[in-house]
Image 1 (spheres, rainbow, N blue to C red):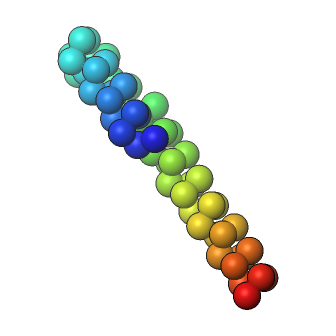
Image 2: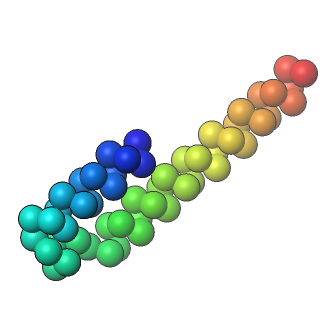
Length: 52
């Protein structure tokens, strides 16, 4: 998932230069990725504690 996002950002920068890359969109994407990672970790931990 992270590789795909990096490829999309990189190809946009290669075609349009630095002006084509929106820093806010990148920050939102990274934040969503970090949030989903943290949520999945917490849920997996809670399930493991509940079952073990």
